[in-house]
Length: 487
Image 1 (cartoon, rainbow, N blue to C red):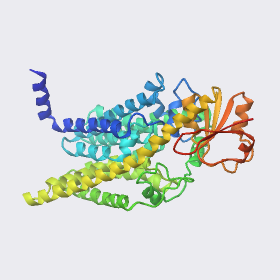
Image 2: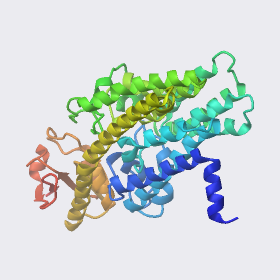
Image 3: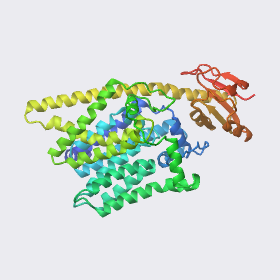
Image 4: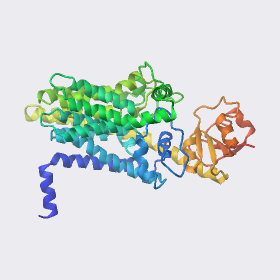
C-alpha cells in the first residue's frame, strides 16, 4: 500500500486525532511566529535555567520554587546557553504536551470535544506566551488535563492498569513542577472518587502514590536547605503572601496583559472587553454542563470544571496578589465544558435554521475571542521584546566596562543581565531609600568579586551610589540606563 493511501485511510479512521494533531502543530508554529525564539529570559526563567546551566552561577532558589522546570529545560541548557535553542525546544515540547494531554480524552470518548477544547485553550494569549517559557503553570495545565482524563478512564468497568499508571504519573508530574497545585487537583479528584458507586481502591492508591512521588524532591530539599518541610512551607507562605485574601479583582485587572499584579507594579483598572470575556466564560461553562447532561456525558464536563475551580481557589482566596498565568490550569480544564457548550450551539438544535443560527453565534464568539487574544498578545510581546533586548545590550555594555566573572550585578533587572554575563545577580525592585551599602554588595566585595550597579531611569537611584562612579549607557532603550562602579 502506498504511503499516501495509508495516511488517508488513517485520517478517515481517526479524524479527531488528526484534528488534534493539527491544533497542536499550529499551536507550536504560532508560538514561534507570534512570540519568536528571540524573546529573552525573564527573572523567574533565569532562576530555573541557572540551576542546570554549568556556565553560570545558580541564582538563589527560594522556598516556594520546585525543581520540575529545571528538569524540563536541562536537556538543552546543559548543552548550550542559547536562548533561541531553548525557546524552540520548549515550543515544540509544549505542542507535543498539548497533543498528549488532550489525546488522553480521545481514548475516553472519540469526538470533537477534545480537539475543540485544545483549540480553545491553545488560542489564549497566555498559552501562546507561556508555551515556550521556562515557567511551571503551562505544565501544570497539561498535567491536570491528562490526569482528569486518565481518572475518568479509570472509573470505567473495563479500565486497565495503563490508566492507573498514567494517572499516578500525571499527578506526580504536576507535584514535581508545582507541589501545592497537585494537592488541589487531588482534592477535586478524591472528592469525585468518594461519590456513590465510584470508589476504586487502586485509583485512590494511584492518586496518593503520584502525590508522594512528586513531592519527594521538594521534601528532601526542605530537609537539606530549609530546616525541614514545615520551615520551608512557612518560608514559602511568607514569600507568596499567603493567608486569607480575596484577589478576584486583581485577577480581573491582570487579564489584559500585566504579567504580575503585585506592588510596586501598577496593573491599572480592569479592562471592560476582558471583563465581558470573563463574564461570558461561566455562562458557556453552564451551557456546556447542560448540554453534556442531555447527552449523558455530564461527568466529562463536570469533573474538569470542578478540578479547574479547585485549582483556581488557592490563587483567589489564599494569595494576596495576582498573575494571569496562575489560572492557566483552570482555563485548560474549563475548555472542556465550554467545548461541549459550543458543540451544543452548532449541532444540538433541532432543524436546519436553528443549527445555522447556533453555528453563526458560536463562530462570532470565537472570532471575538481570537481578536481579543491576538491584540493582547501583541500588547504583551512587543514591549517585552524591546525590554529584554535592552538587557542584552546592557550586558554587552558592562562587558565593555571590563566587568568579568567573578562579578555581581546589582540593581534593576540585574538577574537577567548578570545571567548573560556569567555573573551573579541581585535584582532590586525599589531601592530609592538604600543609604547604606547593601549586604549583598559588601559580601561580594569581600569575596573579591567585581561589583557593578545598574539602573534604567533615575539620575541617582539610591543614596549610597552618590559615592560611586556613574557611567551613562547611551543608546539603550527603553529607559535611560546607567552603570555605577565603586570608586
